Image 1 (cartoon, helix red, strand yellow):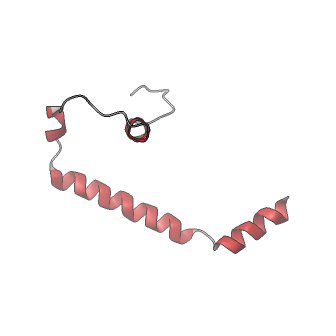
Image 2 (cartoon, helix red, strand yellow; image 1 turned 30 degrees about the horizontal axis):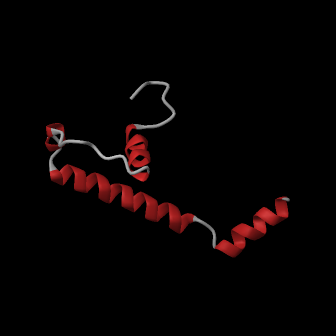
Length: 70
């Protein structure tokens, strides 16, 4: 939204959704992006999240590392 904004556009959408704020009417600009492009984008996001989760250490190992630092 703004160059020095802490949130990205998607962050605002997620925050508004979490607060139960919904648009009052349909926005025709939503039809500009082809469905296939949206599906590719979401599939890419899903793949990145899965890869990041798989790269995490097991819970017990992560907790042991945190306790060792304390």
